[in-house]
Length: 130
Image (cartoon, rainbow, N blue to C red; front, side):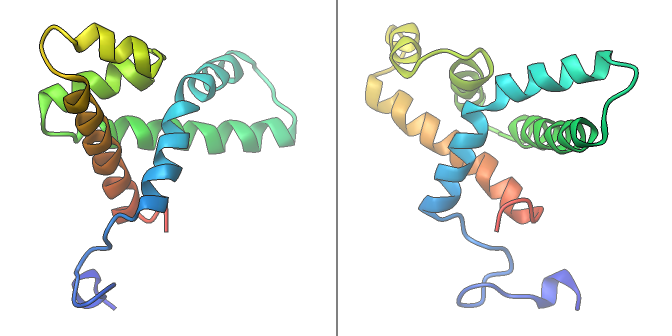
């Protein structure tokens, strides 16, 4: 079956992002830095036991997919806020304060939601989340 032939919900060619997809993606983003550090640490080792090798491969793919999906975000403001909040591992309140001179807290909230949604959309399209 060709991808264009498959439909999800009411004639959609691509699946819609649900609230559960966004929540799952937010958790992936919240664990991004920890997983990236783990991948970098494992990459330094010359040999890894089988279980560690499986974890390494899994987390490496997860980190790469998140980075790729992040890089596909079109809006530069959304991208900056997602980077500040999740990739620089800043708390939500710190992120709001950091951007308060150029936008309101509700705008920061909306941009975070848009960014998480954009990343979730890519991950869902690629079959990483269902």
